[in-house]
Length: 358
Image 1 (cartoon, rainbow, N blue to C red):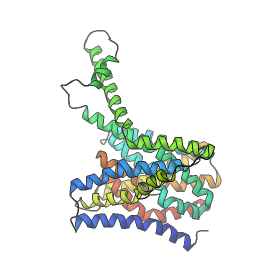
Image 2 (image 1 turned 30 degrees about the vertical axis):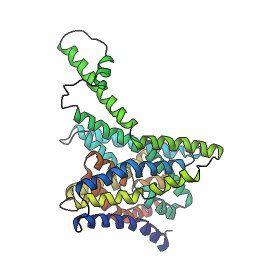
Image 3 (image 1 turned 135 degrees about the vertical axis):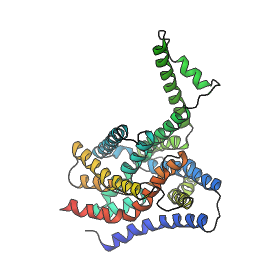
Image 4 (image 1 turned 180 degrees about the vertical axis):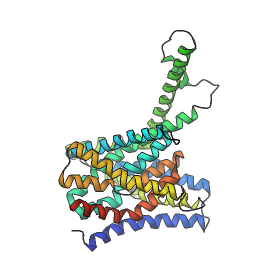
């Protein structure tokens, strides 16, 4: 049974996030301390330094040899189901496009597990639940955030490809050389042009991802965790503390960036009340429903099923907002998801907890 002390620990983990956000909001709205360019620079610092180093820290501290495979499969299946459902919805709706798929996946399947989730799940289901949730955090940092970055870069490359570039680039030449000559005629030429365009977009996306610090941080984190938990090798103290000093403020800086963004908008609910309600429904209803379906399909039962379900009902993660702001893909919707998700997350999680206990 959850005690008042447990609830206090959850609240104590959440309130500091709002303190960082509120300070940023006041700094711009009232004190005028930051210009728009400076706000963009702060968000870029979070995206390029704080989050990658935080990802490295999270991944490198997890034992990759003791992962719960059923939980991993369930998490993977939930993301796959979300992508299929969202792709179908956008295909047959007026709001089609990759941008909405990215936003929908961020809202429905990427919870804020690190700060709020671990103390909450520990209070509900014990220390083992916290360890299992940490594995979900590792998967998000290692796989899903990188896939999210791939989708962001893909969207940016497709947008950029609409404008013709009269100057041939190395990527254009490489894409054209990769295509074999097909017959003559307009149809063959059209097919060739589409293939060249596709290869060009993929080459652009691949190059951008290879230069993204998050890609390197997650890969190095996985390599180091494999070495550390196999042979017991530890990072030198100088390197460990250098990473820690930058990564420890990652979530706080991300919330600070959120506050800066909110202050730049004419109203707090930047996306409007209707879209805010839809975002909350996707986060707290559709996300857990997809996790329930995937967990049952994989064979999760008992406490493990409850842990998987409740963690899916955690509020929207802050990292997708930082990426959305960096790539300008519906940051207003994701900022609203973070803001109100953290407020209503605790009562909703408790409601699900008691319903699952019946």
